[in-house]
Length: 372
Image (cartoon, rainbow, N blue to C red):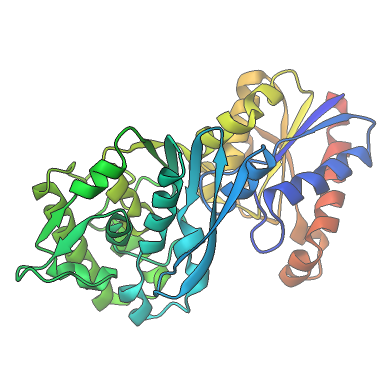
């Protein structure tokens, strides 16, 4: 029997790599099987851990954090391509979100990571954009890459989304020179545009500490920023699906010509999970919370789709499962179990995640042994 375990991270408790190890142990507690461990990610937090497990090389760089403090960040190089996770430089975990930080946070450190990668020989850069503290439209990133951003009086515009309302002109000459010949991609499964009721400020701003007044201010700033980019000869980005991801940092990359790719598909191609699934007897996936977002381009849905195409049954183990059974079966998931079902509390589930994941995996394998 051959089983593929392909989990995403269990946020707050296990990386995808750690989750795969626990699931593999659970399989072997029940059957004598070959277990292929294929941790996955969807381009968000945790993607670099998966790429490191696939043979990537970690590059550590100290950069400017979202509130201009020093941050120990890193990116991963695999072949000649650099994978830059925006959250490593300006993640929400670096701030205590409030209205002030919502306006001040910026992406300058993201640009420093990209610049470092390009200047050290990367021929391609993949930018993953989830989990940022900022709503600056990627202005900080472009400034770190050499852009000059001025107000109507010719003064430099300060960092942070709150300063964007004063943007009048942008010069991208140095950015274009730096990125000449570099294949730039954005990895995201978010489809939010930059502006409007489903845009970066309206949807993600409140998660980053913005109140109603700050959301309006950030929205106006993003509009001024997008208009200035267009005047500078960049691509018009206000309506592009996905441009609002990461507080608009995706939009800045798209303005420079970056292609948008599914985060899961990009990572899956690197890790070889599609090849592993073909010919397996059982596939087991999972993540911290199996919910409606899981079916909207997240890694477990991607794994389930790969298994469906290959005609392989798939089970899911998650920290919690809030999807109704009909939704799970529609996604192709045959059996499932949640860690909270066997825990005293949510806190207990987080604390004993590896132990509970191993036991829950064994439980679903027992329920599906007919496929073995």
